[in-house]
Image (cartoon, rainbow, N blue to C red):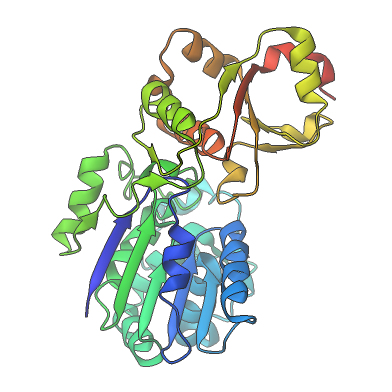
Length: 343
């Protein structure tokens, strides 16, 4: 069966690509990492068909992991009550791989970042692949850049199933480290070329050309991201827009109070009484026209020195996500200029 990997850029049409593959005759499994994108995909599917067809199953990753992979094989035996989302207790790191307490709390909640490892330890990975082949003709997995730790190993295993598989993602939109467990795939996202070679070894050849231009961002925004942040992105758009760093306090306050323009913060947006989100939380959102990115102290220093590309990888990726939300103008302001608005 064919397996393919499409590495895209922000706003290049990943959702459109996935939805265009769907029909009413074959059986499709769609998996995406975040709840945000699950909602986006559902809306796109309903827009295409007018409803959510029975032959198309859409899961967020952990819903798929628990309900499709874990429960049919281990649910009855272990009698679990759900998933534990907080950090895994340190003492469990020293427990043997064969000890169930390494994977589950006393209250029978599974540690989210070790469910995939438990499936491996229980020798049910082959059974999962057989189940996938039995129920689906096509598997489409979005946001693959956010698979890490043991979850990435499970992803590679799924790719061995007798089912056609399409993987889609944007390497530089990796903003989550929720599934990390010790040193397992700890350096997975440290190098783009090495990341691609992992898939090549699994005989999945990455395509970096098909979705390498953004339908969302203008040429100016793409140029800023490429030149300043150091992430290569091009634009399909012919019309242009502005990328402006605002320093005048009156202009900043006017922008801050304009509820037509989203303000994107590095973190703690809830402490500001304005129309806002955090950088990473805006991933997958496509409905903003003008965008204002608020630069925290560290990012502002890097910006002034022309060294945004030297930010720590997760911070750089979140900044890329924030800037690439803009369909039109991109404004940059210093958080220190609006501290007086902070609750």
